[in-house]
Length: 430
Image 1: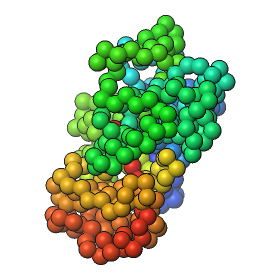
Image 2: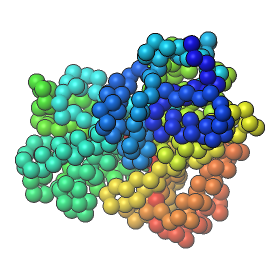
Image 3: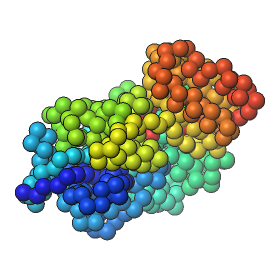
Image 4: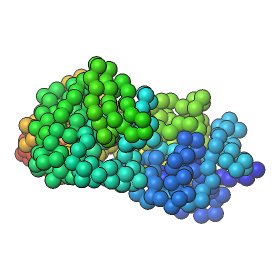
């Protein structure tokens, strides 16, 4: 049995960052970093072959997954939280004093018939991105075959960006040999319907349709058909469409295989407090596997936020005066030739919306929940407006105020003077 002071589980950006911070704070401490355990076979194989693989804690557009390679790390097959022990795949047992879980998240894949067919792709890593680019290039050269994009969130927007780039850029229509060959299939009424009010989401959906994308809203997939490769998509409403490539943008789920059946195994992620510690004393969680209260229970999937979490967790694990993790969720997305920023919790149940400006010309969209302002979406943002919004959201999180417009009246005057603004969104598909 090996005894260590600190055990870090995870070989992506979050795990590396936590291990590096601990090593810097406690140079002589017994520290062991191991791989993410069950459910990571494809990740492990890609790393062993020398391929650039994904950090389970990051969406492809965040830059978190670039160049993550475990590089010979051992892998955990089982954890015993009560005894504070980890069983490695080689049979070795590691006893730890403090543990940090950084196992990240995995893409949601189709679980119905045909979900494992060829040419049904997710896009979570550099390997996935390269595969999608190759398949799109083949379809562009062939001049035939339909691409079906599943989902209505940020990943679906990224897929559409890639297709439009192949068709000649974001500014034009899907003409030429791409005409009539791109379909968006989404179970909600509007694209980005989880993050925008009804009017703005309807505008967004119309803009995508105007580019030549066939919109199939309020449709749910029943199954995929084909022998080895995707050939048809069947919906629950009875429709059947031919398809040569399926791009699945349904968001991610936290990797919880190591904590299944324990008090930490919640479907939304491992619950942590403001100090990133779980209810198991000495056990911390960082990255997209952690459900963090400062964001309303959100999983942080942005590089900046993950690195801040790593700093806080390492500091607290090494026994110093404890620090709180304070950070306003913020993501930048470019889509339809516009810049969006999503700040705060843009998935909280909306009680009320307030929008300043018009869709397509720059707007500020405020989302109010049970406790007041929850999140803000900006379109074509000015830097000073975005920073002011972030400061107000940070103050609201600290005070826990239940006032209506947590942004405060000063924010309104700043936005009015700026006219154009911007927004950010979470990666999870709507």
